[in-house]
Amino acid sequence: MGLVTSVRDYINRMLQDISGMKVLILDPETVSNVSIVYSQSELLQKEVFLVEMIDSISASNESMSHLKAVYLVRPTSENVQKLRYQLANPRFGEYHLFFSNLLKDTQIHILADSDEHEVVQQVQEFYADFVAGDPYHFTLNMASNHLYMLPAVVDPSGLQRYSDRVVDGIAAVFLALKRRPVIRYQRTSDTAKRIAQETAKLMYQQESGLFDFRRTESSPLLLVIDRRDDPVTPLLNQWTYQAMVHELIGLQDNKVDLRAIGSLPKDQQVEVVLSSEQDAFFKSNMYENFGDIGMNIKRMVDDFQQVAKSNQNIQTVEDMARFVDNYPEYKKMQGNVSKHVTLVTEMSKLVEARKLMLVSQTEQDLACNGGQGAAYEAVTDLLNNESVSDIDRLRLVMLYALRYEKENPVQLMQLFNKLASRSPKYKQGLVQFLLKQAGVEKRTGDLFGNRDLLNIARNMARGLKGVENVYTQHQPLLFQTMESITRGRLRDVDYPFVGDHFQQGRPQEVVIFMVGGTTYEESRCVALQNSTNSGIRFILGGTAVLNSKRFLMDLEEAQRISRSGSHMV
Image (cartoon, rainbow, N blue to C red; front, side):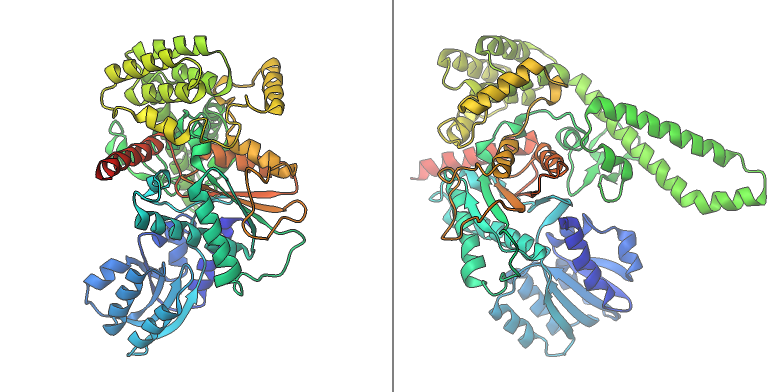
């Protein structure tokens, strides 16, 4: 069962067991959890006539006793306090309280004491404390995503809140899947270790009864890893549909805000949904490369023109009736065609304006092929190219530095100086800060395939065979990690187990959680791996879904806090 289905099942059960007119009350986090898997029209079918935020309910005194209030909120102390106030002055006829994670006993007592008017009909835990973007990819949408890069001493309480939120999210995923995993973590990451240990404590000690599900043949695996082990993937330009939309325009909770594109006519400046659950064209093309998408959209436009032509040929009453019956489907098809044509057109303009095909070729060479001298020349040429944007210059220097940080310090310094003169908007030392965070000394995996003899041989074979597409030749480090798990070769010394719960045989279900965030290139990697029927189902989760802009923003924020922290010490 995929994660989207799990969350939809929770919402279905929550809404269909309560008859009559309802208001659905959410908080800033659960609104994402619900909206990504459930459309407004589906809510209407379940007699939900109003969707409100918990804050706005507190701000109003208008009585609506004809409506039943259905709350789905996180079990935070702030939300419990808001509910306490709202139950003391009830505006609705009935209150049905659903929490997206574990409630503490003290919180239940507070709610019970607050229900003096006896309006609360039920209190339940429905474990939907994560955003399920795709069946095998979830995120926690954490705003303070940069905290994983900071040492614990810089902001101990901030890091504790960060860890608590991640543990809550992981716990909800396993409760939704009805599984208790064995847990492993990346040895070189303090944050991954802390989260793995706190998750184990929750599942095997504090709430061991709740997680005591029927034993399966082999225990599922939870592997907690750190984004800094592969800083290359979020720095690359993307050339497959879903990843490219997020990189060039932005994709938040499966929605694209076309208002950010100023050049569009007013009627097209809207928010559009890009969901594999609701859009058949997107589902079959989300992992396709940019060239193929153009051809497939042309086919879709041709099909639509055929339908439009047949609709113009109305001569009899039967034709008219058929047209009216098919009209909703026709309008939906028209909207879909318009959406995809707009997205691809805008991305084509950006590719041309920023010379991304030229930039991307060098990026892929830096990520996948050797040859330091040629790489230095290529990066220098692009830094001097007026058409290359500041962010692309920065990413090129970062990729070069990650690849060749030990090889020629003089040339690396020359690139730092050139970047500083060409793109002065970037803080001094940002590339150096990246190397401090995710340089060769800090990484566990064989990121560039040049440490391990097997990887060197594999890369040589790939080079001899040639690649299908120069722009998509890069494979995230996650691919190697999944391959190691599938073959039973994930080294205990690099990825130790927590406690005395070890893996018996090969796991059939694996959740890989990436502290610091995932990318759509990696979620594509997981979907393709799952389609090979290896006997293992992988699920990928993270603290955020990154594009290069967000990754660099987190890096800048961590650098800023580190600098101010070091002055204070």
